[in-house]
Length: 183
Image 1: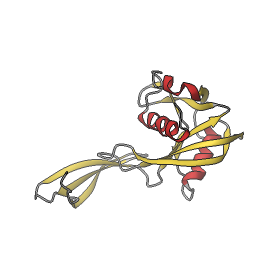
Image 2: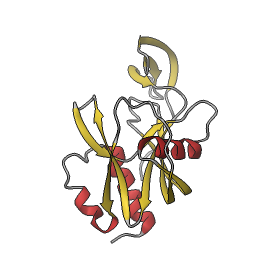
Image 3: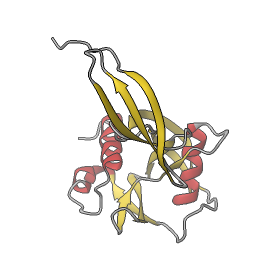
Image 4: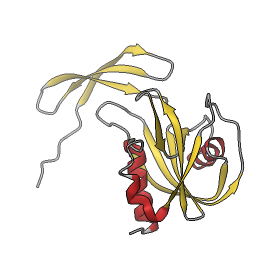
């Protein structure tokens, strides 16, 4: 059985860098054994984010969009930040309409994921969207997002697609597979 540790005491924090999207904090900690360390963490906005696995006519609907981090077009599920005053489920439905042109009559929360808990404080809620209907809202994307239907029965083949590599989308795929009981 593993020993349960007490959370370290935060002696103090300071912002060491800041951008439009993130701020980097240096955190000075004292652990229960007396050891002191400094860690850095990125703090995003406190709004949170959503990702949605849309299911329509036996297909998952994926989004193909440019990702500056990899300098490549990536295949993944619609996602985005939760707007101020908005509930996560509302953000999920809005992002669907902005990114792939569908709304959902049924949204089910599958799980809340942390992105990189050692360095990043933000969380993302993963939803599955069913009973879709056509509806488009204007988003903030600089170019139209490609919509790629992928057969539910072929979900495992998606893992072999080199453009489908974002860990959050891979996690969402497995959560959807479990929820839908796909073999």
